[in-house]
Image (cartoon, rainbow, N blue to C red):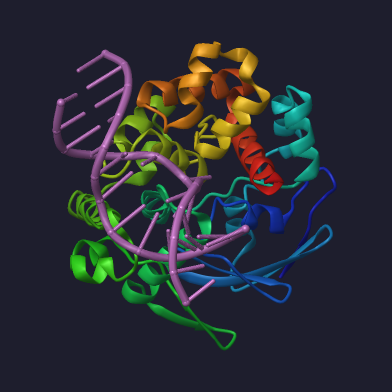
Length: 289
DNA sequence: TCCTAGCCTTTACC
DNA sequence: AGGTAAAGGCTAG
């Protein structure tokens, strides 16, 4: 199946899948293979043309955020030279709509880890607790359902390289499974309320909650602040803060009030699509090092 | 091969 | 209330 994207709909599949928002996509040749909500499919891009198999167009449009007006978003967040440069360099990068459950566990695992290690952990979890699916002669694994992780032993979880995150993943899985937690309900809550609910899960603080809201629940105003965003702010947006504050956040990790301050800055400076600005800044900052 | 710094932070405890 | 240390181990250089 193929669709042709109009030039008014900028999209870059590679940037979108490589920028660190998703962890379980695999590239083989020209094709990207993904497992989303228990289903394997593949997709490739040639210029304005998107070709995919084993999935329908509606899903592709929703998952890759193709129905969002990225030109409008880019114009709205293009507040200064720095962000404009990132927008230009990674034109077509879009925020995906991951499965919220997988996204939650992914970002609980992601704390204090680098991206390759995160990928490794999630692959391990899927191979150990997910279902094997064969597609195009290759083996893939679905992401484990809450019930499966809620009944896993801590020894088995530890083998996946989760370290001290084992109890967070286990307890969160148990809560989601036993309360039959409805992630979809969060979509209709205001940002702050949804964030508070997510932060009730063990292992989920402000940053992880922001990531889940942005990457899976369509809260595009969420502005996750990690070390890279902190660096970008120190480098390009220092004039918005006192030198005393800048000095404090310089070396150590952020306290919750410091996080709240940087988060609020991003949201008020970039506006309702601050999450998009965050991802461009993040990718820009990371690829420059 | 070994070593070290750093990692898309959260929690428990002063 | 606000700051701080510990958490476990992988990865990149």
